[in-house]
Image (cartoon, rainbow, N blue to C red; front, side, top):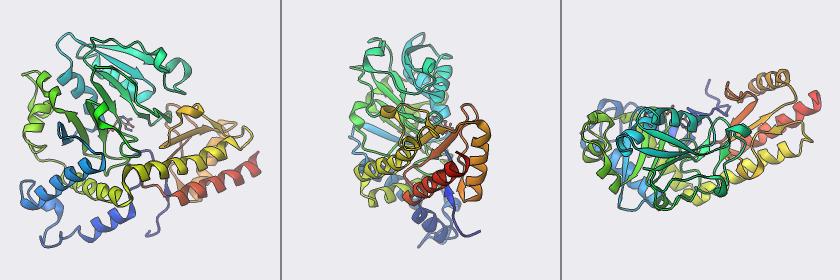
Length: 362
Ligand code: PMP
């Protein structure tokens, strides 16, 4: 099959076509190198240019100040659930967690193995349909850090602005909305994201961390799990995921060519609005999961009048080349993931399909 369909998958997810085309063109031999990117040493000049170019472009894209390090690690965002407390929570210490969905809960579960993960706020009792208001947060000024999830991929709930946490370092799992809109990195101590939604293929995890955090890293950590070792070795302590970094490099270049984060933010908001307008205009046939002010621009989640209709919706959509719309098994319903690389035409095609489906099954 050479024709591409509309891929609404939550991750791994759709990548920009120009990125895939360039990777395909240069897969057998990088220009001027005569070997594939997967066949060269990670300590070669060629790979050095790729990883350093990637970092430089990330710094430019997100205006990352010089006091921050940019790391390309492995183990996914899930390993960061553990690395963050291992590195930043003192022995017997405590950290605050704001929980707005399934991934935040997983982060808490890992952190509890290393110290006290205090729930500083949670909307679980409301099925994670929103993020907590500032007045609902119980922040501990002596916590080692505050952790939150900027976008909950499963529930489709997104912070429109990061929580205000005073002087306590703010740590963010930005796996599913990183670089989808402008971000003021100076408000954060550490940001991490698995690449497989907005940045590239799975296998590489982007970590942006403020230099002063390294002072807290305990001495006895396994090298691979130690931020200090990773910083000192510029993510090359061991063999990095070279192909993942290469694709991320192309994806970041593509983001810059698209006009950067302001332009992406605008486009993503417009794309999501097309879909939310269709949901809101369906007279209650399609029911959104998240409250309007907290809706994700990346993962649009909604229900139909019955599970039977949801099954039918997904299977007919798949037949119409609208792929991977089934909601996460833990919450059911429909989830349309529309990350940076997802085209507006695909959102419009889905809206057309939704109208037809309602007409026939309403
Ligand atoms: N956090 C969020 C917000 C996610 O969406 C995901 C993956 N879907 C994860 C963490 C886990 O990421 P990984 O599979 O890279 O460990």
